[in-house]
Amino acid sequence: MTKRLCLLSGLGLALLALTVAGLCIDPPAIARGAHVARLGLLVGLLGVSAAVYFGAVFLVQRGNWPRQTVWLVLGIAALLRLALLTTPPMLSTDIYRYVWDGRVQAAGINPYRYIPVDPRLAALRDDTVYPHINRKEYARTIYPPVAEMIFGVAGRLWDSVNGIRLAMLACEALGIAALLWLLPLAGLPRERILIYAWNPLALWSFASDGHVDAIAVGFLGLALLLRARRLDGWAGAALAGAVMAKFLPIVVAPALLRGGRFWRPTLAGLAVILAAYAVYIGAGKHVLGFLPTYGSEEGLDSGSGIWLLAGLGEFTTLPAYAAKLYALGMVLIFGTLAIWLLRRSLPQNDAQRLCQDAGLLAAVTMVAISAHYHWYFAWLALPAVVAPSAALLWLATAPLLLIIGPIPHDRFLWPSLIYLPAAAMLLFDLYRRRSASRRVPPQSGEMSCPLPSR
Image 1 (spheres, rainbow, N blue to C red):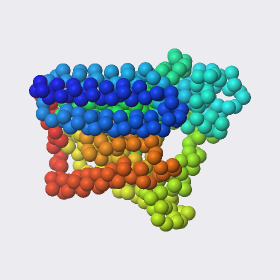
Image 2: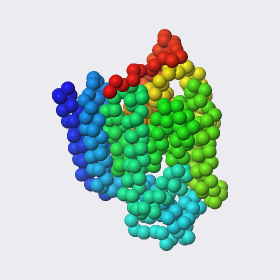
Image 3: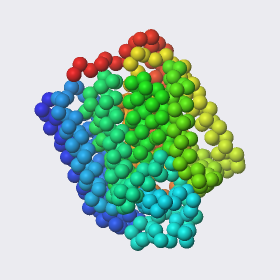
């Protein structure tokens, strides 16, 4: 036991050392995109960090651990985040828009009403935040209302990049705390929180760059906990909170609606969504911000931004309707998967199955949309804490490769390093789950796993 605990400690310290080494590679130059070689070196270090992380994940799932192990895991996690707070954001400028939106709200202005270059906001500009805002010349904010509310609170309390980063870490801490309560319900030891807390993609996405996805992590963790405790309405409201921070978590809704629990979480979720938008409805049609045109800019409308279609486009000219046909196919696949999950009977204690189903839905969605921003995948590490499938762990970590693109404008070859293995793992996982369900049909009252004795 002592040797394994020392090994786990060594892996944690190695991850911390690699993180600090990454922070020493001229953060201002990387943030400006001024030094590709240094960015490549950083990605190399993150690749080694991912290998160390996978080793720690493998180790923490093996055997029994002393009670104090969870404090070791959380202590290393806290040190990793504190280290990343010591330098400016390195891999994205999105956080400057968050600070700006908070500042606009602190001035009593609806953040959806004006683009940053509008003369009516001139008094709010400075030399620290405003020059770094992306799309400031043409785009209103894209972020949903719950995210904007948190930006507004941060803007009133601490109008700065670090203010936003601390707000994101507080939301992330909510998700971690919820999973610490959920793990015993699933019959699993709490030290498995390492699967999320040490994940390098989550670390750099939230502690360093302060991405809004951390809000979704907090509310999604709360939704999973509440659903496992059979508080269905509250679970629906919490999931709606996650969706109103980042739209992607809506795809896990079928996991929360299994077992005939439909109306209460659905109505509670819709109430939260309507109430959140009502706060900003003064912006009228602009309350959706940049969202209606985002798909076009990212190549989703044309299919050029979708991994599979981009690959097919390398060999043949795709018809104009290819993207719509692809979208229809993905909707049918997702719908079939959701119906299969909804129709399955549930064991009495289904905390593990809940996270397994949520993770499967999330992984299928992320492969289907093939996002090319690495931080879009960080939230997948949360359900992996309870249900760590190979596909989910891969998708929650491997997108670190998307930080750098060695081939300009490439949407297929380099991303294939992520999506090809992920697709293969997902197909294997689906086959295995389908085979298992045919061999051993779950019975009413069956326990999915033993409850903890400690």
